[in-house]
Figure 1 (cartoon, rainbow, N blue to C red):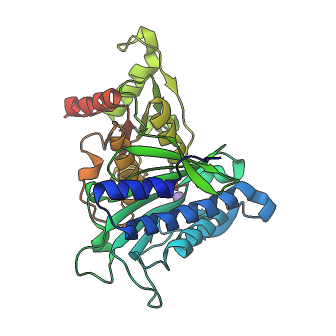
Figure 2 (figure 1 turned 30 degrees about the vertical axis):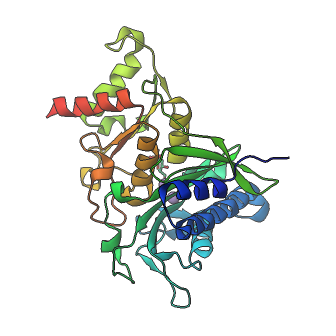
Figure 3 (figure 1 turned 120 degrees about the horizontal axis):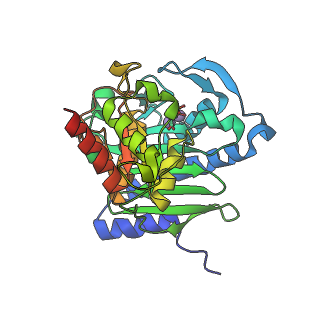
Length: 335
Ligand code: AHG
Ligand code: MN
Ligand code: MN
């Protein structure tokens, strides 16, 4: 029986069309292996005692869950040995992780969030893994933070794994966005969502409304108008969702449209929002744009930003084109 197109077959065929190297396919295969491993650990949960806090903090001052650390190690172990990477950067590690000298080095850089939405892990709600692949600058064999400071537009590939009712892998290499579902029996991601496209219009928004009192006027105006429904200026009713796992929110938007916002706010404006540019906002922006959506800070295209720090935060407004453009217009009108 034919099982459908595997993700490896898909990438090799895409590589033949676009002239990529086998090196890149091999790197992605290692990333997929990591995500299958993470899927298995997340799925077993407390059966193998992995839920709960690790009692430590990451560089961003967030309390780490046991699974933040376990999944970080899984991603590193699956990709470090293969000879395709020159360096790695993770949400859970302060600085760039070098490739140990016992392994050959390659030409790519990998940035990742090993477990996105980890506040949801103990309550058995969907979580994910996000990754971004960059080229290591020519002539650099021991990349440091400065070598990762490339705009999102330079990404070679971006993807996420979603550990939900099904485990899925959604990725782009700049030729559209494609979704694959893990067949647990076969152990392969199979193409199930070819050429995903985000509807241009939506009546569904996602924002953590508990931060409302800190919002700046353009975001407050947009959300107020949605909530006013048929009686307000939009003349239509809107629905709201907030999973608190960016991976789950972006996946919903890819499947049925929507707008997702994690804006900067007045609580700590210098922080620039919550989400991290290198391993959350940039890869998700690449995936969203390749599916016909828009991704902005509210004033700038996220993928045009020149990063300044590995763990830099950035405001995020992404999803259905016409709604994101409306939020951008509200920011312009505010100036
Ligand atoms: P992480 O678990 O990797 O730290 O990321 C969590 C992020 C993101 O996935 C989600 O959209 C957001 O934080 C939720 O934030 P609130 O808890 O403020 O709603
Ligand atoms: Mn995250
Ligand atoms: Mn995380």
